[in-house]
Length: 177
Image 1: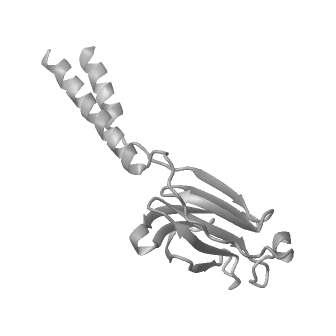
Image 2: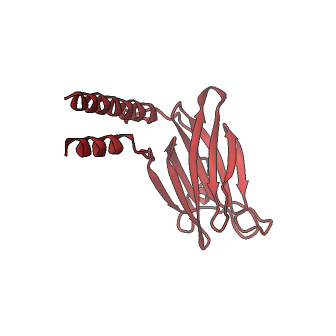
Image 3: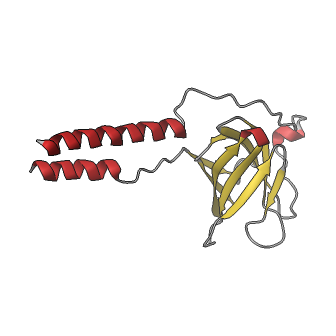
């Protein structure tokens, strides 16, 4: 009975652990401009038109001012991988109609997160103008993204490795008895 219990504990400790980030849901049909701070591993679900597209922030290369994104287009079998540099505009066409549907802009970044502007486009491929922009507030200014005290990916990996090591030590102690 002890060996079965130890085996179950070992399998549960060694089993793969998914280190997922936060999920951000944006509806660009209701609000055509969204600015979000996204951490590595976060998923962004974007409702635009009658489809939902997904973007994952894969990596922040802070010294180079570059981020790597994985774009999952609804109806496509494989993701597209995008690299964006600071203040670069990325125009995306989700419907393959040669009209851009959305613009991504990397506004600022820190070692573990990026601030991205998501902006929808109209049927002609022009940016949708919001009420605030008509009133003269058209500039979205960037501010530096400051890190917070939330645990990051490295901390999670260290904690998981520590749990596995402690579990192995405990199992070896029980196996010797």
